[in-house]
Length: 132
Image (cartoon, rainbow, N blue to C red; front, side):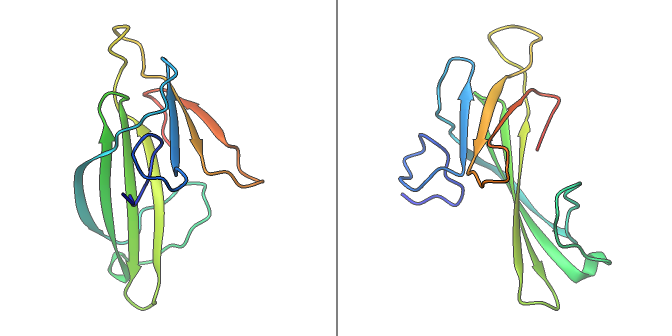
């Protein structure tokens, strides 16, 4: 089975775009469809280099949300198409969404490893108060 955004343990034999290690050492993330919306314009990616629009009517963005409730993880896939250009851009936002059920009041902790490039850091540790 080929997935748009494969995660380790998902059954897609292509390289994982996202690998999570939870507090128990499990590498399985089960990202399920949680919703979608279409928005005018292109979302700002903060400090990341990206394209932009000066007016919301210049582009439309499809935002697909995937979630793993056990991990307290949300993944937003953002696809932007431009009105005047033959271009589609893609970005991904990974967010911790819940607290750990094992210790009341403690954040969900997991380590995120993305497909690496020589200049990118490959591992991030996050809690419910952070997102990338």
